[in-house]
Image (cartoon, rainbow, N blue to C red):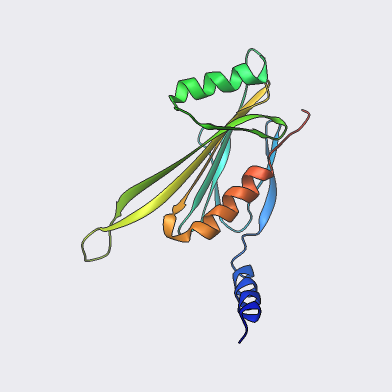
Length: 163
């Protein structure tokens, strides 16, 4: 088997793991979230959480009061979270920041010793001066490719609407 044929087979094999996305909207924020994962609303009504057996996506959206410049709003969020040197970017044509953390958690196993599991948490915050939001995506570091696809597809789908 040639190397190019192997690459094609591997690419086709990975397509079955793609996560289907569905449109969502909270306040003025529009985005896509995993369509077939279990969805639960946030207790305060600010957003929702989507989860499967391994990963979790949560989005919370809030109005900004008083309305202020987008950069000032983002700076206040980052300062309140005490983030040092976050990755600053633009999401939905407004300022945003991203932070990635890697942790080891212990997960109980039936009838056995707890198992250590490496997890990656990617958190985005953003604000356009009228709406602020926080997006958190958590999953096993061992599933970095699938986790990365979810992070990319959700974060790149964020748009501010008119409401």
